[in-house]
Length: 364
Image 1 (cartoon, rainbow, N blue to C red):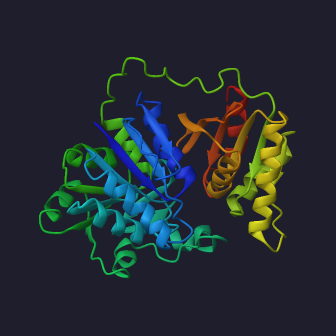
Image 2: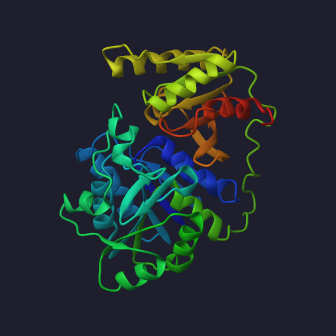
């Protein structure tokens, strides 16, 4: 079975494949739509979260066209609805030629649930949480019906899996309510073999697919499960490019409890882009001089800029450090090093501490 994932952000591309990798799937992460791959699970970062300009639309459409015959095609989006969720799904469906759009935004393990077509974070509509004040991608709508209606597409809400089956007979776009991982698993079991579906959802949906769909047998000559720097990084650095308040709290916890090598953007800088460029340059210099042999990065845009600037030759997703936080082996022309990439608004206050333990091989 071939699964193809189109996503809009680097950390999403990584965490969406990590759950498959640790279950024995052959996976690949692509940074350009021209680099198609024959792995069983392939994810493409189109970089379209920040805006949905013509080039981003073209990247989504190109991938959906190239992968139209995939056994399972997924348009992955942020579990808190940051970015151009509706536009991406609409473009992917049109380009793929698939007749039905099944939307499952829930990520219960991270506190994201869906009820009445509305996305909640820990019981609060997501636009009323800190994500509504996100400095780069503020969320203004929590209701999927309203989000898609603004772009001319009618979405119908299914109360559960059985209701979704009924609605899909007469409706082209359905969003499914879910409060638990078991409900997502049921959804996947029921519809995974339906070829005309374009799936749309967050990492929660992909983790369910990795649990439910049996992994294929390892091919002769395939790489063994990734050890991901079994001995641990000896000179790791924490790189904080995200301005999300949650990431900043996590950074303060690290500074209070650990003597760690840290690079972080200056929140007072008038030019966030300039601050991010400086952070990227400093990180690449640390890696090239051997001062750093492993990274914990928070902020998808930050991680992508570092990988592009190296530049990376390949990315191999190894496993999840915890739900939604992947560990990756980054290969350049001169070295290979482990990197943990965490989305800016993700995890509790101790998340970065646990990531530092994981990159150094310390047992929790």
